[in-house]
Image 1 (spheres, rainbow, N blue to C red):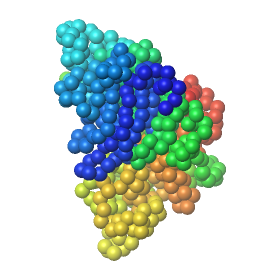
Image 2: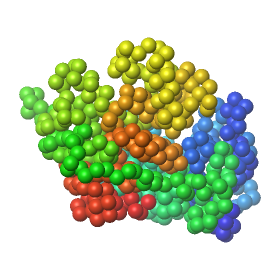
Image 3: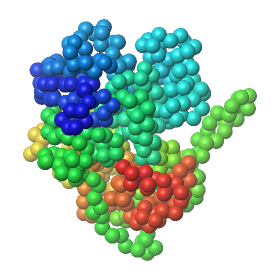
Image 4: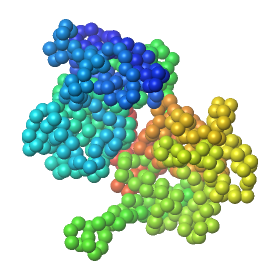
Length: 547
C-alpha cells in the first residue's frame, strides 16, 4: 500500500475480509496490511466497520460470519510456512495469540476492566497465563508496567480497583495490561475518546513512546483525524464497510481523493453565533455569586465514626448569563464543571446566591416548577438519557404533561411534531416517527431527540453537558450547527459544559476555566483562548492546538 509495507515484511496481511451478521454483510471484502513496527490508523464514523474489523482479527465478534484471510507472520519474517490464518486456526491456538502476540486496548476502560479485581491482579493474571510467571513475580512485573505507563505511586495503584482510578489512570492500566506480554501488534480502539484534552495528549505520547520502546505495530481505530495526523504512519479510511482511501498520512490529509475523506477532514467546529448586547445593561437570566457546593466524605480512622469530612466541589464561583448568550465552562474531569451545572439546575444543595430569571431555587414546589420550564438540560450521552422503553412521542411530549397539563393528546402530538421538525426530524424522513424507539436512531439523531425534548416547553436557557463528546466529528458539526441556529432563532441562552476547547471556541461568548472546583480565569472567549493568562488555561489551549 505504500513504501513502509513494501520495504518491510508484513506482520499482518488481510485479504477479502467480510463480516456478516445473520446474512447481512457489514464489512465488504477489504484488504490491508500492517508492517512490523508500523502505525496504521483505521478511520471512519460510527457504523463504518472499523471496530468490527479490528475485533475480527482476534475473532472476538459474537455471532459473526467471517470469511477471507488474515495471515499473521511469525517473528522470523518468513512468508513460507510461517504464517497463521487468524480466521481459520483452532480456537485453542488463537487463545495463545490473544494477549501475547496481539493485544487490545478497548475504548471504555471502566467496562473493559473487571470491577471486582484490583488492576494489579488483572495485569498479573495475563503474565501468569501467557508468561508462566509465579504470582509474586507477576505482581512485581505488574507494578513495573504501571510505572512504565506513568501512573504515580504504582505499587499503591496496583492494589486499587478500577473505580478508584481516574479516567486517564484507568486507560493507563489498560495499556499496561495490553503490553504485559510485549505483543507484536497492538489494537487500540478509540483509546483517547473519553479523555480530557490534556490527558488525551499524555496517552497519545505514552503510546508513541511505548511503541518505539517495544518495536510493536499498532492498528489505531478512531474517528479523530487530529489523532491520526499526530500518531500514524499510514491511514485507511472506511465508509459503510469499504476502505475508500488509503496511503501515507501526509498524502491522504494534504490531497484527499475521495469525497468521504474530504468530508471528514472538513468536519471541524465552525463559529456561527450572533453578537450579544452589552452584558452590563442586560438583566441576567442566570446569576451566581460566591456559589459553593460541598459533599460529606468519611474521615479516616477513628474520627470518621463521629463526624464527616468535607469535599468542596465548587468554591466561590461567580458568573452570569444574559439572554442570547453562551457561557462556556471548560476544564478537565473532576474540575467541578458538572457539579456547577447540577447546582444551576437546582439539583444540588449549595451555598451562596444562585438566581434563575431573578428567582432562587427551593422556595416552593410551584415556584421551582416554573423555573424548570425556564431552564432545561441536554445530557452528554443520548443513549443513556433517553428511556429505551418509551416512544418518541412519550419522550418528547413528557415535558408538556408536567408544564402544560391543559393540552389534550392531539395538541401534545402537534407540539411534539413541531419540536422534532425544529431539530431536523420529520415524518417524511421517518414514517411513524412518534411511534419509534430511541434504538431506531443514530447517535446524532438521538441527540436531536434530546434537544427536542428540552425545547418543547419553550425554555429560555439550556444547560448543555458535553452535548457532542459522544458523537463523531461530522455529527458533532451538525449538532453544533443546530444549536447555533436555534440560539439565533429563539434567543436561547446556553450554559455549555465541555472539556473540548474547540467546541468552546465555536459556541461560547464568555468562558470560565475551572480546576479543582475553583474558577481560575474568566472573560470573553477571544480574550481567554487567544491570550490566556493562567498557566492552566495556557496548558489547555496548548494541548488543543497540538491535536
